[in-house]
Length: 204
Image (tube, rainbow, N blue to C red; front, side, top):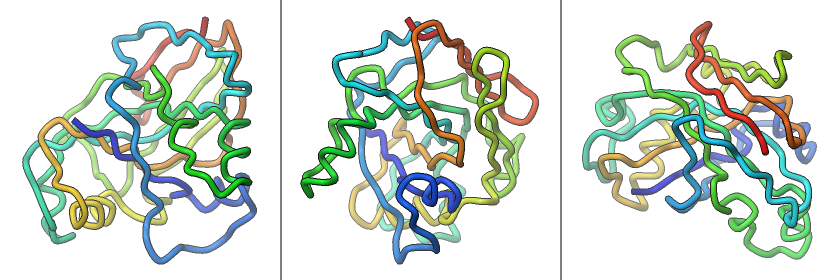
């Protein structure tokens, strides 16, 4: 299975990250290995040797059938569930690599850097209007809505499937809104779809 992720898919996050504004010509796509998955509420053990680790809360969709070169108008047929996930990022490492013009996937793809909440059937949601949020230690630190994405879920699926075949079980992390910051030992993170908690774990 593949973990496909979208970078800078919310305008306010792009602004806080590197000061860019506007919608690019195409989604910024990167991938995380399957070894990066952390689920079932297991603890996230902070890899302090990587320097600063930032949380990025995102809507995650699960692919439910084989698809290649999927037209955008049919993309909704290719996913069946949604949750909240955390795309952990080794920010110091990422910035160093970006400054060198080097690939930065390792700063995104280290072990346990893709945290998954409990999936919910997509039938219960309007994919173009899903509210989600992240609380840390009882305080809301990120809040977003899929309506604010620069590239919608269906646009991302249509774009990615031109390059690589999507398979059952693949995951798409759809980008994070503003509010990204550093995670610390002892933090308890809770992710919500609307008012429903679907993610909870602790940093050790």
